[in-house]
Structures are given as C-alpha cells and as structure tokens.
Image 1 (tube, each protein chain N blue to C red):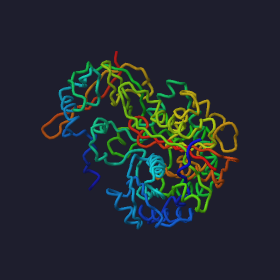
Image 2: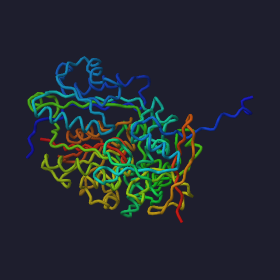
Image 3: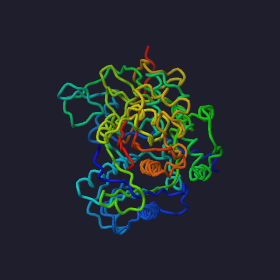
Image 4: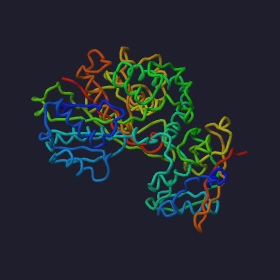
Length: 395
Length: 138
C-alpha cells in the first residue's frame, strides 16, 4: 500500500470555451478561487504554486503576485499539455517531503478567441531556432502531421485500422454528449453535428494529414481550470472527500536515429507510477489519457500497459472504453480534448475529471470507481514530447 | 488596380544559417552535400551538434521511408499553396534519420520505399543553401 501523503481536495474547470474578453490571468484567478472554495480553503492557505508559464515569462513571480499568494515553493515546469501531470507529481513529492502544505495549479487560455492555429500551423514559422527545430521548420510539418507520422507507422507495423482509431473519437463523443458543458462547447465552437458520431462520420470527415481525419483531432477552445492538492494534515479539514495521489512517473522522448516512434515516453513514466501506487493497469477504472488525437490515445494505452504494443486497435474496438462497459477502463469520461475542450494544454482537465470520477461527480459516472490514471503527453508525439503518469485513488 | 499588381509568391520558410550547431549542415546543403556526424564513440549523431564531438561525413543520399504523412492543410501561405505534399522520416543508409519532403504522387508513397536525395536551391543574402527533397530511387 502506497503512503497517502497528498490528495486533490479542490477542482474547477472554467465552463466557457469562448471566454469573451477574459484574459488568461483572469481565467486563472477565477478558477483558482473556485477550486479553493470547492476545497473549503482560501488563498491564504496556499503555500506552493505550480505554473506552466502560459501567461508569459517570469510566471513564477507574476502569477503569485497576481493571485496574492506568498509561496514557499514555486515550480514552473513547462512541458506543454503534460505540464499539469508533472505539477501533480511534483506537488505529491514536495508535500511528502514537508516542503509544501497546499499546492495550487492553475491554467488559462484564450486559444480560440486568439484564432490560434495550433494544429495546422500558423501563418508565420516559429520564432525559435533551437537546433532541432532548425532542422525541420523548412518542411511544413504542422503539429497534426507530426502525430500522423506515428499513426502511419502504427498502421504499417501492427495492422491498426482507420476504423480502430476512429473508435476513440466515437467513444469520447459519446461521453461529451452526456456532459452539458461539452455539448455547450461544441455549439459555442460552431460544430454543427454535436450529437453522437459514428465511425463512418469520422472516416468521412476530411483528411488533415494522412491518415488523420478532422474528427480525429482535438478541438481548439478557450478555457482553463485549477486544482488544489493538499497534505494529509490539511485533508482532515477540507470540504470534499480527498482524491489521493498514489504514484507518479515522468519522462521525455525525442527523435533518435533508430527510435521506434510507435512507442512514446509513457513506456518510461508509467511503470514507476504504477509501482509506487501498488496498482496494475487492470485495476484502473478510469483512464484519463491525453487525447490530442486518436493516435495519441492508442499509443498511450499500449505504452501504459492497458494493451500489448500493437494490440491497442483491437483493445478499443466495439465501444469497449465507454463509461458503461465493464471489463475495461472508461476513457476520458468528460468528452476529452476531442469533444469537450482543448485550449492548448489539456493536462489539468485530466486531473479534474479523474477527481470528479473518484468523488462520484462525473456526468458519465462509473459505478464504484476507485482508481484512475491521468496521463499527460506534451509536445509532439512523433518527435519530441514529455510524458507524466499520475495514479489516483479514493479512501 | 490591385488585380494586375501581383504580390511576390509566398516563399518556403528557410532554416537559420546562424545557428551555431546546425548552420554548418545547412551551408553544406548549398554544395548539395547531405552531411551527418559520427561521434567520438563511433555512434551516428543527427541532427549535428557540437556536443558529441567526432567528425562530419557526407552521405551517399540514399535511404528508405520510415514513415510519412501527406499534409493537406497548413496556415502558412507557402505550404497552403504547396499542399498536398508528402513529408517523411527517411532512414539513410549511413544510419541517420532525417525529416524531409518527398516529391512523389502521395498515392504512390509507402513505408519502406527507397528514396534518393535531391535539392531545392535557395539564396540567402550572399549565401546558398538547399532544401533536401527526396524522390523514389530506381
């Protein structure tokens, strides 16, 4: 049995996918206040700040200032969408070491309002001249195409089919339809067909970068949220039942001359997380798996040990990962990035929905859910990416 | 009268020759040389970097497609006009993996296909570089 040192005690997901004039700072502030209220705590209780830096440089100073917090610990790990799983892992470690008592994670984004072309490439190349990107910027590889490289190779190497990949988008949409905030999001983002979708719908949508279709890509939305993580001492007095952080692992992956790109850094971050938690993949009720694209989920499910490498396709077939099917974990029960929200860095929502499930508050509540995994993938799955796995459990 | 005044055609974004690690690789492309690095420990290093030491060698320019995609949508004006185009990771015979465009009918491209490097020439100020563009070999 893993020691229970730190727990999620407060959560908030900003409900709007078009924030209409709010800034990223304001989304963070609103979300933080709501998550602390959810926990029965105040800003004065917060002594550790974890921030991915989406508001700009020097966030480690500017965010505590804006929120009026005097932290004794600041962590600005910024590794894209997986940042919040890294933050949860670090908060768990820091709280266990006695360096923090109440940790606050916040996120705010106006990606939709800014018309940011996250997946398909902007009108100007990236300003960065990091050596690795200087080798690639001339080739017009937008983010979606990078993930498509993995999908193409996965299909070649293991016989994975477009229908199997599409299953993932069909399943997350089925969950979104049950979540009023996700339904409102689809409408607000101008998605005409906002009910359930079929495999044929997915494969009939236009191809963005072969073999990935439009409906295999996450939304681009505004949004944000906050998570409060507290020590076992603080947990005694919080408002809601604690959602314990039981284990965590982290890793990065980058291109190599002989790397198998069908395997991500999750294969390194998963085992230590499961070992620390004393949990096996088959014990997991809720799989909150970063769904930037269908291939992301398929790859991560294999890498985390839910299916053998190459067998993710059959594993997801037949709606097996829907919330109401026994025998397999429920996938992204809030609707995921594919059908609820993706403001650019989705990791915080994986923690939030995992906590909802273990509290019994999800709109696709899995009966008797006791164990969840939140796995964030940040950056580019086909080339350089970050991975963090967090295992969560209830009392 | 804007209809007769054509804007200059959008240009492919080019790599920086000023980057201290990869600038030499791009200068070599100006002479149609595809270079790679073999480190002090005998292992192939790519992309080229000072860290890792060793020496730079010229590739024969032959390899096979490890994976690829067909880009059909892009926000940059050059790539929007250029689409659809094939981008691949190519495993070169010397043991390094390079990202590059493949100039071929998207329907004919496949994993494992043998390809040979070709060059798209550019001038940057008074310097030259070339973008590697692969074609089916033999």
